[in-house]
Length: 311
Image (tube, rainbow, N blue to C red):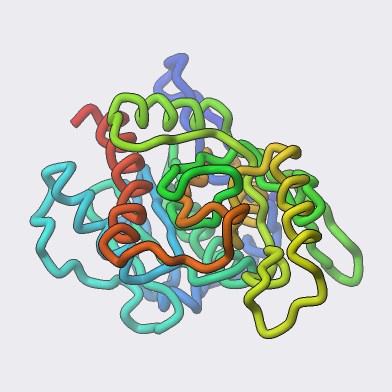
């Protein structure tokens, strides 16, 4: 039987359910040790339950600097540490990803694009499983290009769609195309939207997010090294995306949604828009304004975590 196959159990005979991590890989049972290579962690070299067993919230984002800033922010918000402290990088033995922890919150960088976040998620999901974590919520916080929204708007993803506006993630495995669902937790999305209303500092919407494999041509930009379409064709495509419910574009949400769904993990994508792609391709806002925008997802997620922990 694959590890974690029964992903919901009763706790102490009560009606409340404990949700554990689901892994559908029977080969893991025969391994003497599981080396999480890109984290520089492993079941033989580290006591993962002792290190991570209390984790309830995992926040992931592209930039190592941003994820360190987030753990400092959340430490102060939860009253668990000095927001100005220099928290150690748990993955200091590798330069692929960074990882920080304070209390029940884990903050992990994932790099840019589907391949980078997919590698990180394989090892993160196994780490949570080996650590015997339960009732974990994983949230991706990041930046994006908006469609038909004012810069600075926060988008909570309803579905991640591909460049054809289909809510799916395709991957070729052993020469065959495997299609996986990219639905995200609707209840969690609504909870986050309610939190934004309570904060009342910035505009937040729920909408579809288009996930692409490229920053330039894949996102219909006119400013890449190559471009084979006109501005009229670009605008037509982006307007079609808007009509399909797409409100922002980024490069990680599809595999994130698919892998979290396969693992039985409650997940959400919360990204701020840095520009309206219907009005241009290049980010021209001031540095200070961009910093303010980039703090909005972490404020929203931080507020949500505080509310869940009743801090």
